[in-house]
Length: 370
Image (tube, rainbow, N blue to C red; front, side, top):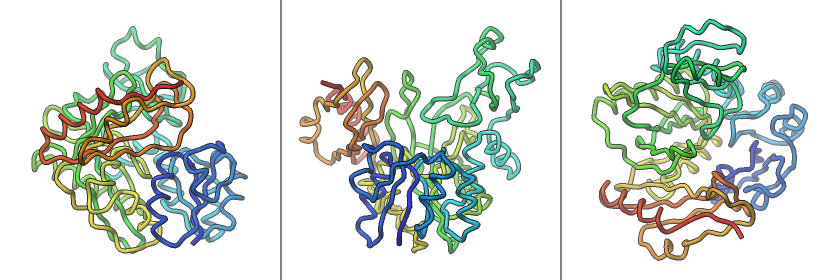
């Protein structure tokens, strides 16, 4: 099959690296000729947000998918009309890429998500109580397009754009579950992962799998995943980001209709990775075994503050001496503060050992520049 991927970042790169085990052609559309996928795919330079570029890219493909949700969805609807297979389908991508539609989707399908109101950027009347979270309707990722409004004084910082205003959850843990569905309707989930954020950068620092949660919390998450995948009515792989509040209630934060940072540890930590599972959803193959090998975790390698330019991975040789430790770099030659440049996966026999290893690796490696 000729499989076309919109977006050439690290998620596409790792997907293609895994999928090269099979006999297909992988084509990528991205504006950056030096993107992570450029040298391991049939690469086309173009804007995945541009209607004409996406439409032209899809013409000779058997199937079109995404590794980033911020794509031109009108072109995907047109490709579907032309008989092209789009996974996940254009409707669920459209729903997820707009926070307002996403929140309304949860409400419609009784999927627990924090109460919200819609803000059009002009209304002076805000009914939601402080503190609340403002999420821009479109374009946000990795903590961008999200801010906390704590009190009336903070209202001066409110973005004057279409957005969702959402009740702030008193968070105990941030969790993630990845669920896949093929066109035959078969579904499988990966074990729930615990996500630890970098508070300065407001993006994922490291993962812990399996998450330390009760049977009741697991049951709530299973119900959410089942409701979501049934309501989405699309083949594909979806990462559902969750909040566990301090009263033991689980809420959906948001969903990504694609591969996700919270699933990277599956590369060595599970019988099959999220990248293998994604391939199987595209090809409508039997879904892969997701069993975990004990405890696994992932540490993001992110560009250090005050460093921009040709990348240097300081301390990587020391990391490579460690047992059950696996380095994944994304082929990005230029680093800048907060840019995801790679990750390191770790296996361990206990949660305590895993955390000790992850924290030790954090002291060894830095992403800097010449």
